[in-house]
Image 1 (cartoon, rainbow, N blue to C red):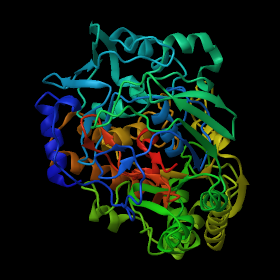
Image 2 (image 1 turned 45 degrees about the vertical axis):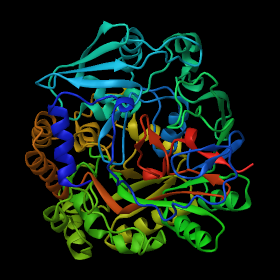
Image 3 (image 1 turned 180 degrees about the vertical axis):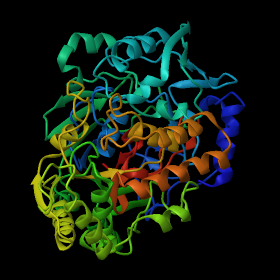
Length: 575
């Protein structure tokens, strides 16, 4: 997305209206590039806009990289795999298109007032939840008041909203305590995924395992750490641009397959037909299989990056000398090579890739690069400090705990980290935990003192994203006591000042400077290290079609396979 596109988006915001997609035209192209965009040999009954033909029905098996702990917005931790499942069960109020802009989805229109403190949503008519109850403005207020803003909710961005006001049956307004240029971003995520309050109340503590949305598929069953099965919602409101009822498929089985090699082999064998990967090595193998004509691959590199997040609230990593020593010890090229990502994943220095309009050469030059001698110098300074934060005697070695899931690739990366840190003098213990446990320990609990401090020292993670930088950075670096997403617990008055500029200002150049200032602060204070940009891909058997060809209502072009996520409602298969 170019600076011109960003400015155009902000101009649209200030022009007070994001017009309903069903009423608008969009002739812009763009979005993420895919290594495979062909549509081969479809034997079809219904034409579609990608010049192939749709075959209706069938069951699609999807291999995901991880399980999600809960499907309830405000409770679940929705990383890339969880988002793809969520987009089958829920519809978003709005979503981002290939042009980089946020477009209405369940909304007909999204209109701010002059100072961006009120955002009024007009909902589509005749949208129903899977339990038959209607989507209304009053329901959206109930969802927010009773669930999303309730104690224990993990939606830190909900704190921006003072009130959800019902204006009429299908119109409601988010009243913010201060204006926000980035607010529409939130409506593409969990805060903008309506779910049935009646069904959630009836399910009680099981609401997160019995999701009821308005989406193209209904939950049939969920066996944790195995299969989540959804079936076609025959009453779904949406059709494609040719009037064909969505979804095309009868059933989708989402299967948690954490082992990358097993997932790829399952697709090659046809046991599952669509796989997801955010790992360089398997993507390289998938691309080779595509060259041989065995698979289709949809490959992108965006802002997301592999990283290790550092808990700045616990010793010894609460000392910036230790965090900087950890960063100076690392060799990103070596870590990327371990991931088999050489030539696929460039090194990372900030939350934005070199293709992003928010990227800064100044930050890239400031980020700590591989300088082992500098790492040893900082470590020695801490080791010999009689008032070191870990309470140990001067001269005692520094012990580091590094937590990571037991995926074979991640085990190798963790061992790479261990070796590089050991080489400069750290004593490093590796700990393997499953993905849900890792997330739970990183986020922490509202019941601890301080809240959400987490139960870890350092853990492998994935940072970044394609949202507005305010959405990304506010979620991860505002007050950790009230922000579950701030898993590093890094927070400062200076960062708050820059976030305030991002929130309140629509001028690109002013916002760019604020982003750059935050990234420069991170280069100095190192709340996380980087492991190279995250290559991501969806790969499928040749019988699967339209993986990256999804559109938003009104035919607005989608973002392909960005983030290894797609709308399965618009996929079809050869019989």
